[in-house]
Length: 241
Length: 397
Image 1 (tube, each protein chain N blue to C red):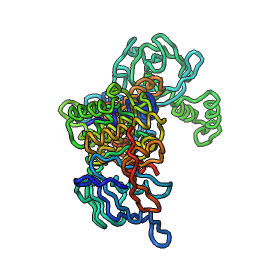
Image 2: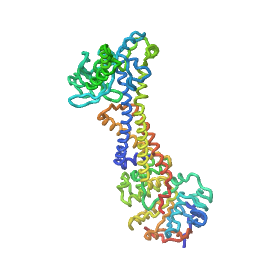
Image 3: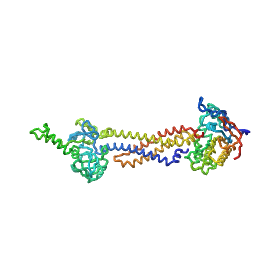
Image 4: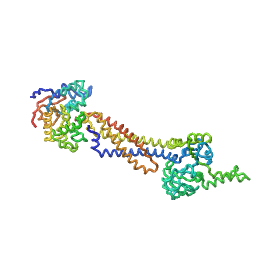
């Protein structure tokens, strides 16, 4: 039984989203009509076998590729509506979408603080303010003591937390996390999920976690299964971590 | 905003600086080649400036005495002295040859002049000027000779009585100044066998050895063995007269060709070293292209090594111009390091070159500007590649 939706505007609203690669007889329909809605403060799991369309959906939600049809609304703003799309997708990604990847993909030539501060700086925030924000985020993720460490000096878990801090730096309404616990052991993986749940609640950010990790799937209250390009909503266990 | 280029360079500073040093050595070669050209031009002009002549009088319709052979009678200068505007005139004879010192050969340019007249060394750095009519010499320090040394020019020994500096031929050979008569003799002197052979030929020639007229043969022999020819006459113009007008006047009335010093410089630069200059220019162009290719390759490789980072930067909303600026700044940084290393290297190794290499400040400034332009152009390929990186590459799948 799926929990009733909170009475608020969804952070992500996807209606009948499709994505077709190629054309003619060789065309591949990666998404065949995805529907999804996620509310602020929710952490939702997106699971499915390889080739089911998870990455394509993530790229559409990340405004990296354009869907073929359907409608994508982000915190009330329409991003795609069939052939129409919002113009400045780069600024949209910078200001309103946070990304956490399987590997942290921190910029190796910046230290932890600057990796996080880069986002607000790109958005035009004053350097001092951006660095203050970065330190606050690192503190929220309990890695403030590594603020001046170079990326190569951080452990895998620390790197992932810095990456999460970066995703949160501009306080986006959504975060897309692609296999964020894949390289981590069970304890650290659960630690990362705990952080995601806490931050989602604290910053009222909607977080979609793409994962295969059996250890963390029970922590989601809602799960979207994706099979053959279609999503199926399921209730999760919502286990405390 | 964080300076991404500065941070990236700082992250692998050693490799970056070493790359810049490698590029710098190439730029050093380029600067040296430009210096070789400048040195050639300077060598060509230095003699013209040093002798303080306003007009060079040479054989009619020739570019002599350096670009073409020129031969004048050695009494022409007397008639020139009678022309309006001519303050002083002096004969000169030039010949490039091997001279012997301590049993070793050295290649020099012999300059014969009348001591006390035009055509001698501009200044001395040691010793004294030539004071005797024969067998004294003033040598450029580049010959390695010292005052008191003795050199052999053809049959005669000369004592080095003075040393001068920066007196070289357009080919870069150091000059040795000797009295005009000795130079004329050295220029036209034949070996003994040749003289004997010529005498025998004349003796059996009925046109010059007629019976009952022995004086004709002797007169012809005397003419053949004596030399009264010089390569040019140098003229100094009287104050208040224009060198161009005097040169035109000489040309009109004396059936000779007269060049002002400025004309002579043009002859030397445009004619004598033109081919060598083209050769060097082509080499410089090739070096510039090679440098550009190397910078382009290095910057492209550096950029391709950061595909994932650039994809992440693009994904998180970094503007194209920020990424382009990062790559451009890194390329320019390489150029700046390369230029200063190249300038330093060129300054270090130039004194070792046997010929004069002149590193001009203006050339260095131009080279710096060209280096920056080349680096900017070379970064275009990498910038294009970076801007084509799909931000989706940051997302697995």
